[in-house]
Image (tube, rainbow, N blue to C red; front, side, top):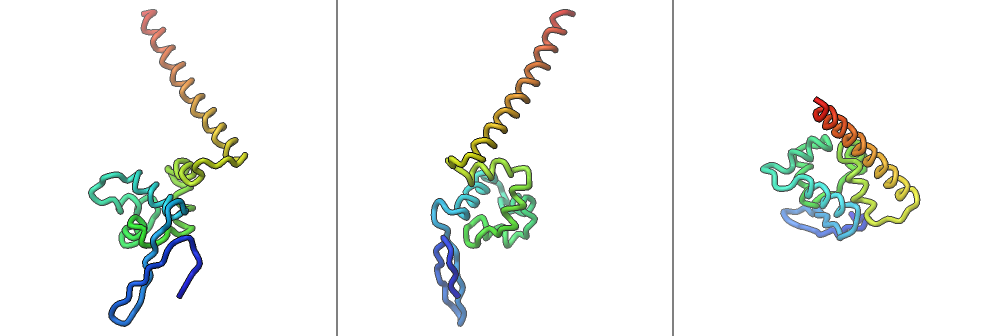
Length: 134
């Protein structure tokens, strides 16, 4: 069975059957996803466990995804984008994209982050002023 994708299939024959191991090429969606999750997981004792929680997949599947032996499914990607790491994942996928919608999205996020910092600083300033007045 041959499929068209940006990954390289490596055939492994043995005991009367053949299977394909998928190795993603650098810069493809699969390699970006693997790199993203591996960076987020870091040096955990059981790195696959976090991927199980984040994506709702089983241990076997998580191990194959992290080792880049199997591609992330569209459902995995959707689940990740809808989760806590969605914004970071989108940034990793988009990379240096110059798309107008993405530039606007990033500006909107920057404004929201600055407003949050501004509110924190305002609260801190008011607390310091109150403490100084006492």
